[in-house]
Image (tube, rainbow over all chains, first blue to last red; front, top):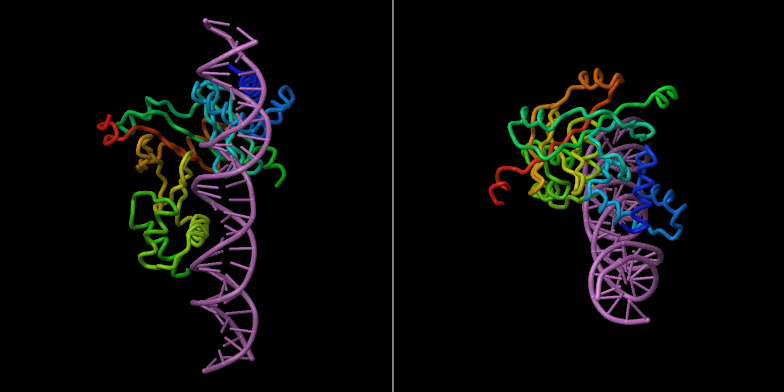
Length: 121
Length: 121
DNA sequence: TCATAATTTAGGAATGATTATCATTTCCAT
DNA sequence: ATGGAAATGATAATCATTCCTAAATTATGA
């Protein structure tokens, strides 16, 4: 595992903000100043393949990445875009029972307006 | 409602394949030969705002569009990318109860390998 | 009916996140 | 040290989507 890959993983494990590739670049450059954005993307993909990192595909914004891979879902504020972790809202088994088919996985995003943003209205 | 917007909506209502903007362009050009891709995108956005059409954001492929807006979720083949409709797997109410927060909506995608693709392996 | 204003279009250029490329650097095992 | 493999940084390419603009179409109202 290269220094850069190591730092990228460590950055993701120290933070619960689900940063974008750009944000990861900034954080990781504190320790690897010459780090390139392409390297961030390449290693994020590798880490996802190794199941050490999870990608959170965003619908209208750059994707985010999550260093915590225990199963959980995401609650997303429509206003500020912040992403919160929530316990799994489904199980593969329940889905397979409902659908009558073998299931590989699921991706669930719940949208709300977070307390902060609600207050501001 | 302009002719082009009308045709785009009609195309979507006549098909259950959840086409992409490009595919919609091809289908709609049979009736409006000069139709431009930008017009397709602009009207798809308008139709989504009016809740007459639903966008299905795809994670690693062009987004798809659905002319049927009654609540339902999607089952997606990891192999061929085909998108199947399935009855809603969640309700807003159940989510709000689980999460203890007011919820605006959710987006759920279930992944599997469809019978056709399974056979081919 | 006609003129004018408002809306929408076609077409092409611009945008921006992500990938690909490639020469150079780093890492080891010999 | 050295040669090959793997990874990097820098930059170019990709490609879905959005933006821009002049021209066309449609609506309005005197």
